[in-house]
Length: 339
Ligand code: NAD
Ligand code: WQD
Image: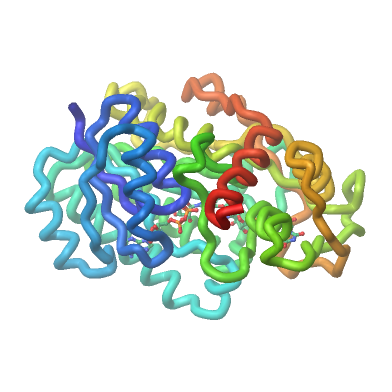
């Protein structure tokens, strides 16, 4: 059984990926410092898979602890690196926190991978690297645009660090550029748990339906889109998680065409904010109070993936619908709020 290190494995996307890895027969060891997750997630993963992954509470910013971990955990064959800070607004206010947590941790991990000959590395990147795209849908060849936020910049810099590392070592890496992950596991054992007021659309919608928020503010209806609201490519987190298993197997089987590859992970279909609200209402029969307000600074107008490379080269395709994703998000919210 291959042993895989999943950093940030108790977080939103990490936990769903651990489930899929265990279901596919991998042995998983998780590192997480619980800065944006809780230990209960481990129970959720165990309830779904019948198996409890190994877990080490560790802050990857502590270089010595990372080195210690690798000394104590022999036989790791691959790393999936999710651990990072991800709040765009917070990154503008506290850029050094983001550079420290998203860049230093990556460097320390890569150094230990090199020392212990761990040569398969999957990285969590983001469609944010494309900025406001020149053409839609967005292919992996689209130019990386100047980052709007320090958070976005950390993803660009991280990819460059990985490229430089792969160029001079046996390291093979796949960077997965996620579009907008939403939804939860169908069992409602795990899901997204934002701390404080959600910044992202779908958790804000589910919390509004649950009565935690009075109304959803829709940021702008005067964009050049069919209904005036922004368009995104919302992808079910379980589909996203499965892509990590496929990408990992690609590296382990040596099927990669170069030692650094990039894949867009999206559905290929764009949905507007107002469409998401309407679809949520339709699939859950819940009322959502919403109000149109001004644009949110930094928002791009329209972003959706060209998925041809992921479909044909990686051999993965998003299978779930936005309806599945929104109803699972609501089921999860109901469970969390005990509704
Ligand atoms: P998340 O916050 O739910 O998960 C990240 C996990 O990493 C958390 O459990 C947190 O406690 C842990 N962590 C953070 N810093 C750590 C450190 N120094 N040491 C150990 N653990 C640490 O976030 P997520 O939504 O699951 O995102 C996972 C990855 O995907 C991140 O790299 C994020 O930037 C990237 N990403 C997320 C989205 C999205 O919309 N959710 C989109 C594109 C890319
Ligand atoms: C989606 C749409 C908002 C909240 C962010 C990061 C990106 C990536 C994914 C990590 C936008 C609108 C939102 C609300 C609204 N993360 N909205 N009212 O901005 O596409 O991407 O998460 O890499 O880097 O920037 O996602 O969910 O915040 O917004 O109208 O209360 O919903 O304006 O059009 P976004 P989001």
